[in-house]
Length: 390
Image 1 (cartoon, rainbow, N blue to C red):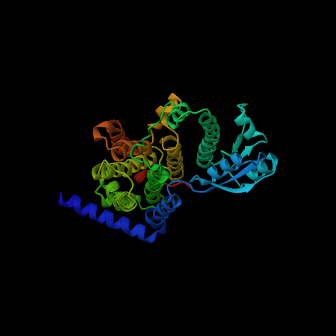
Image 2: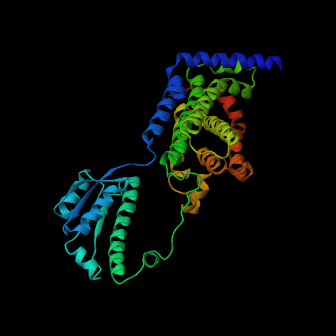
Image 3: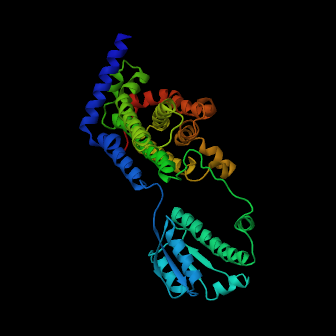
């Protein structure tokens, strides 16, 4: 046991020396992760976009239409920046990215409201920027409904209806909305918690086969295996231990920053945070070892890991729900560690459900960790026999 500990210690020291001489390790384990954390958390530090530019085409120009415009401008996410004489001018402003949307109030809108002729007002919005488009659609639809309700309220009051009767007529069913765990609708809570770990996993995916492949490239592989006493598991453990500690430090540091400094909701407590982070880092390293083991080529294994890590963003379910995808894609999504990390975050950290509810995702991450078992014989043979081919 003492001999194993001594070998592990010297292997880790050797790896630290390699990391110190090669700046790519410092960039991928510390510098770029820090930049990623600061970028994503500061990019959405307001939670939701505020005062997005909107235009108005008000051809009615009455007290009612001007009141609608003032109400639209009063919304938190909307700011009226310009009035246009016609629809073509406003459309060209959207194409020039000067505004995200505009409201068109045609002539005769107010008189049509009073005579119940059902006048039409239109709103146009750009959905190229998905968040801005969806939020402005909500505001514009609300203002259109408010305009109709205002006219109906005036007519009902004129015929002697009480305030309670008017409210009941205009809104027969009152919606009592409660947003679970994130009542502020803070996009930072939804996106940074998946995007930052996803980017960190890219570095883990790439650095793991890189650090193994460079042993073969620079003809250090036999020395590496000799230092481990021919034990391939010990050689991998000593090589990846410093990287694992650094990646865990960055991931746990990010968790501390968002949960205990920025105050992101985490009713699940500390243990699910620690467990999901540990399993995610080890799972990505396991896949990286497996990829190099089945194809002992630095270029090919890094290409596969790069593809796998990038596809994770689309299939993890953070931006588009997996259950709404095709059944085949739902199955493929289970092959990505980020998917299971995100599910553990959603169930155990964000919503506070017990870890037993995420048993499938925990089991899947353990399978990723165990993948190197199937590639160790081929990896050992490659380290001792193969010659590096660029």
